[in-house]
Image 1 (cartoon, rainbow, N blue to C red):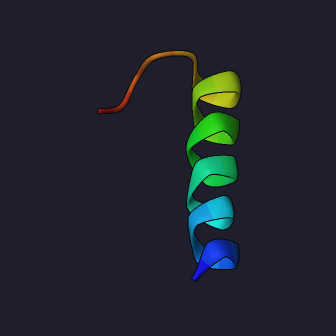
Image 2 (cartoon, rainbow, N blue to C red):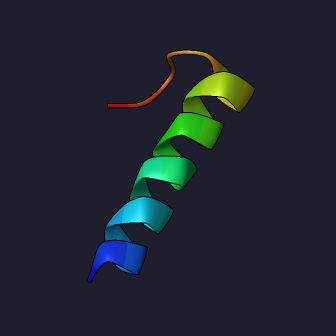
Length: 24
């Protein structure tokens, strides 16, 4: 469960860093 949460957080952070603030 922790791994899934960590993956989601990393994915969100990566998206924000890669695309700025384009998503929710």
